[in-house]
Amino acid sequence: MLILGIESTCDETACAVVRDGKEILSNVVASQVDLHKIYGGVVPELAARRHTEVIIPLLKQALDEAGVSFDEIDGIGVAHGPGLIGALQVGLNTAKGLSLGSGKPFIGVNHIEAHLYAAMMSYEKEVKFPALGVILSGGHTCLVLVEKIGKYRLIGQTIDDAIGEAFDKVARVLGLPYPGGPEIEALAKEGDASRFSFRAGRVKEKPYSFSLSGLKTAVLYAVKGNGNSVSGEDLIKEEERADVAAAFQTVVFDDVIKKSLNAADAFGCKDVVFGGGVIQNRFFQETFEKKKRELNLIWPAKELTLDNAAMIAGLAYHQFLERPEGDQLELAAQATIPFASS
Ligand code: KG4
Ligand code: ZN
Image 1 (tube, protein in one colour):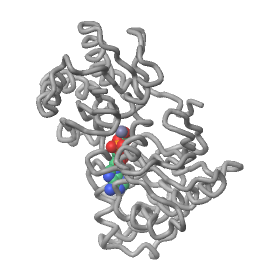
Image 2 (tube, protein in one colour):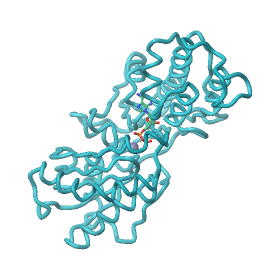
Image 3 (cartoon, helix red, strand yellow):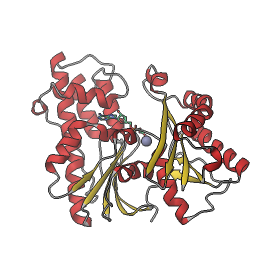
């Protein structure tokens, strides 16, 4: 089955052609990072306008690179959330238009589920279920039990900031540009994590949930002084910024790893699948590999880690197996979608 995938949830427009959920025939992405960089974050209206400009040429490119004509496509998979509504509308309405014009079915895909599927898609073997899903991104920090593809149980999430958001805010405190995650990772390499002692938050009676806002404030006060704001003067020496970055990064990831190991034990998971922009962090990957005990860690291939449409087309294939007729034109773009679908 040949599926055309479309992705426009945030600041990447992407199209892909995937055969039978796994074989990637093309996977093209137009990133908007440079467009938003000067604003320190994604500007929703600019994102939507750029999606509108590039989506049709990108669709043609994805078909060309795959060497297939639109006639040969069996169905269209499109991310219908979670994301920015204006941005989502571009991809979703393109999918609906194609479907209406051609009579081919289209199906809405949850972008976050697709990030987890990206890891499974990259894996040559069969994933052992239940697997633990670890999603770390700019908007999500969650642990989910993957009972099978399409069946998930949320077992823990952040009660305040998402992990990527915390990285971006701490980066701002340290005077680093957006997106802050890679900047903190680079700065932390020169730092000594033991020079500052930060603590990750605990959530009462929720052993697999996260709280990062207290930690974020502790970093702010360590750098700028108690009660001061991001725009205040630094209290610490220039060379201590790297120590703060290292201490923050270590504490956050130790917390994620500890809770993931405990959850895998408690729910009898042998495989762990990862998704979201933050998991690109090499320090996180290396630390988890060292501490994994007998767990098998399944990371997405590099080209499937960032937002892409191959993961959308791949997951759509599995949804089409269950619902060949796909979705109706009433399917709406959704800013948030509750993760658990069990
Ligand atoms: O999944 P993603 O590309 O976008 C969504 O949130 O959907 O994740 C973006 C987030 C940003 O907050 C960025 O700072 C963070 O991922 N990030 C990182 C790294 N690379 C990107 N965080 C920590 N370390 C990294 N190397
Ligand atoms: Zn994403």
